[in-house]
Image 1 (cartoon, rainbow, N blue to C red):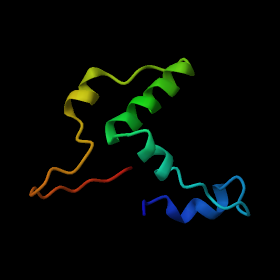
Image 2 (cartoon, helix red, strand yellow):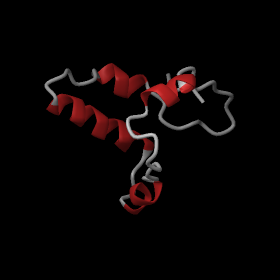
Image 3 (cartoon, rainbow, N blue to C red):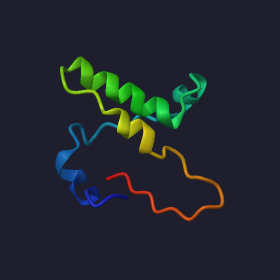
Length: 75
């Protein structure tokens, strides 16, 4: 989990409704790790926010590199 997991019970909008697993639908559409970020970027641009800079795309690692020790954190 992340450092914010302890807040989950206070911020979940509908705590009595079971979550939706989007994994199977994403697999059917052949989503990649990078696609998820691209869709998020498009969503924020649609809200009139700034697109992420090219530096983000050039320097980000979206999937663990095999046989390489990496410490990856989502926050």
